Image 1 (cartoon, rainbow, N blue to C red):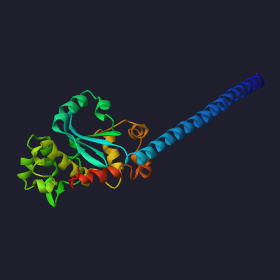
Image 2 (image 1 turned 180 degrees about the vertical axis):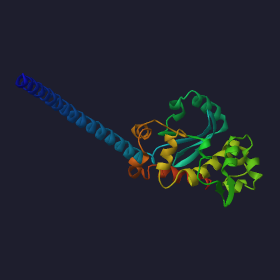
Image 3 (image 1 turned 30 degrees about the vertical axis):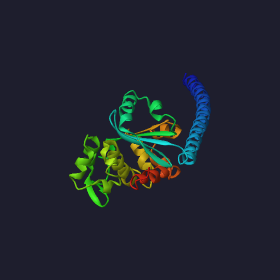
Length: 252
């Protein structure tokens, strides 16, 4: 009986080993094939993102960019950059606000290459507590209040900041939207668009910046650490910074 039990036990062990080996081989093959598939998908996605980055670097400078500052669905000011700067008249702000409220970014984009919508609250999250305007310091939260107000110039003058500090004429200063565009242009150039465009991408990831069309790069940014694309993205929006700098030089 003891021998029979040993034989039975041995048979069971052999069967278990055979089944386990078979399953292991199948699992190993499945994992291997799955691993190759994952690597292939990741490689393809990385290539698409890289191509998108190259496309933006090549075309961003030559193409029209529409930049809008908004408070929720209310457009506060905006301008287009395409070599020169074209400011949006106040008469267009209601139309843009209506489109923004419907998330109709396509209509807002129009014939431009890219639409960039900045949430005014991005300014509150800046590292520095103040904003420098012609050497004068303005509290960042006060700047947000100015941009949200209907009397921007008066609020700025109460802090000692004049049209000259904003590099605009007295005639231009009659337009509340134009005053806000000048103020936002200074903030955009000096505080938001840093030497590393990852700072801009982080604002996009946090939902404080909307970029349309949302191509591969921007879709990917939502799901991966920005450090993964930091080197590739350097200088991505450098031309935007240079063009926006024209706001301080009173270029038209």
